[in-house]
Length: 98
Image: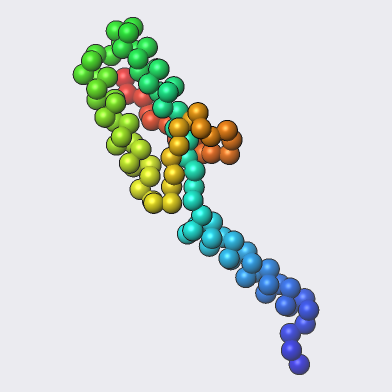
């Protein structure tokens, strides 16, 4: 005698859940959002207020590239500017150094 309908439904649900989880983890692209304009605006305001020096300004600009490289280690991770994404993007931010 073969499996009952209930067993077939449970097996199908397990296979479907495994397939969706595997796709999300290993195939699907993840979209991250970085507010570049806001970050640059903040750094420019700090520079104009005299809270940071020109050297610190340059260091922080270079830190953006390093930060974005670290965030996009996985080739499936896509980082977009905050102005482009309307919703449902995970926001990443660069920790401020004072």
